[in-house]
Length: 95
Image 1 (cartoon, rainbow, N blue to C red):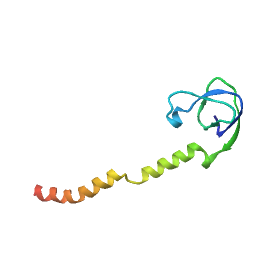
Image 2 (tube, one colour):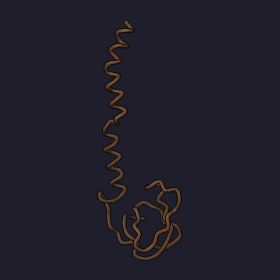
Image 3 (cartoon, rainbow, N blue to C red):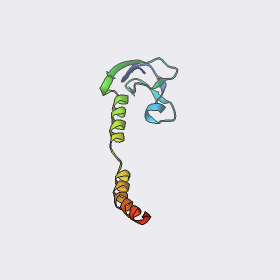
Image 4 (cartoon, helix red, strand yellow):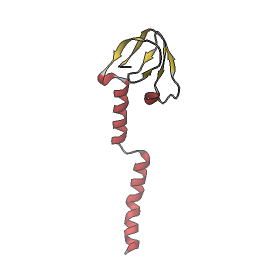
């Protein structure tokens, strides 16, 4: 699919595995939403484009991933806090 949209006419099975993790192709028909980047199976679909660019599903996923990677997780914060006190003890023991 070239962009996020809604099916106006036609039926097919779409492979959305790379986008949603769904392992099997999903049957879609008129009124169903499609995600840009999914792969069409055998049918012919006429879609109305609803979202492109920054508003598309894949762009929103990329934004969420970037935000998540830029912030330390709770586990990282916990370990860092515990290691701050522990590293000075290790230095004293090694002398």
